[in-house]
Length: 184
Image 1 (cartoon, rainbow, N blue to C red):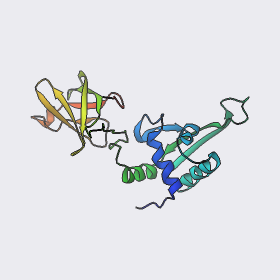
Image 2 (cartoon, helix red, strand yellow):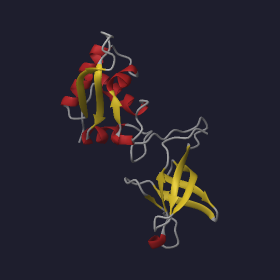
Image 3 (cartoon, one colour):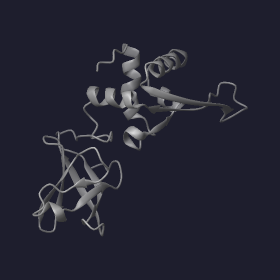
Image 4 (cartoon, rainbow, N blue to C red):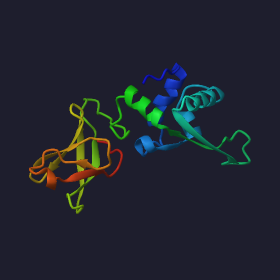
């Protein structure tokens, strides 16, 4: 399915993962005013573009009549923006800096993957602690240096990422992302 967007619509869609409140991957709910601060178009035009994206089914817009600062006549209402399934599909097809759950994957200047903190658990759910993992950009897996060598985990569309190089799949460890980003 191809969704045709204008250059202004694309600008706003690409700004979503760059937003400061984009903390839950594709499930993030963003403050509309903060999102619009990150795009290079006037506020009135940007709000029209948001309405257009909502009409196309890419975004859900939520608004209240209440202002965060009633004394400020320029203050906008408390409104939020969230991706719909169609919006998620568009981002997956048109961005390369997101993993399968919509989290940002940044690389360092020498094209090395960014290190993230993950929580490792046994197949029974016993917590093994937090580890540093790096995303292998070639095959989209997470790699953790364990006590007995390199462990690899699948980067698939679920919160639990299973170990792919376990001796027995039945007893494979799994990881969950403990935090979105850690700078190197």
